[in-house]
Length: 321
Image (cartoon, rainbow, N blue to C red):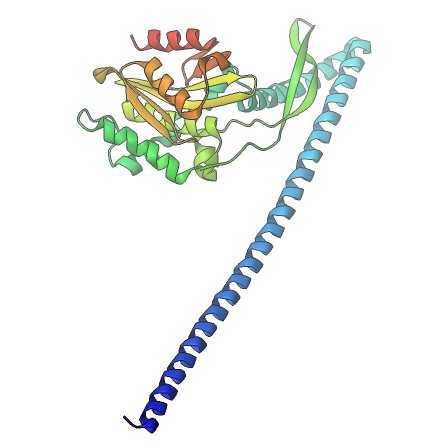
């Protein structure tokens, strides 16, 4: 092989190498430009979210101020009523009755969405998810030979389609007092507060595609209630401690004498013939001890019970007997 042939091969190899480097450089440049475009897009999204957060905060502030002004005006009306003559009192009582009804409706709505009281039962609405259960399973109710797969499918659908999101601030009314006027009971006064807890109905969680632990538990338990259709029942169980509040879904299938404990917010699912065994597994999974817990609440659309964890477990076990 002569020198000219060798040089030709070297030049060809060098040309191929240069071409490869040019292709690689061009591809890397495209990647860099694509990354810059993505970062610019993300920056615009963050700016929009910041504007929305500011708008929501301003709207919440306006709402709180309006509620505070309404509270002051209501108290003024009560003072006028106490000092009014008979003719004026009749007109004022008519106005007061309408305001009293509006404030009562607002209080019921706020309290049921904010606090774990018996009013939370109103948020447990299986009827809102009947179509969704049929959409997920292709069948509307319990199937004896397929219930394990069906219950797990409802749990998996919740994990896949409902994103965990912390609660937003929510205006609340508290410390409501009452007074008797002309033989009828009227609100005498209340305080305006703000809370960081908001409990969603199933339809709210479906529409938003997001919620925290109790929102996911209410949704999943409602779907379980629809699916079981009388051959079992489902509840939301909330375990509470000083620095720990968490809710999950519990169902019981009577023909199989089996509990399903599902917590889509942390990715835990188990079945057991014994509720305490299932709860032991769940507590071990999340790293919480029984001794850390001091209160528990269980509810669905029919029952509400609050007590110690042991007492609440006994309550559930009595329900399924």
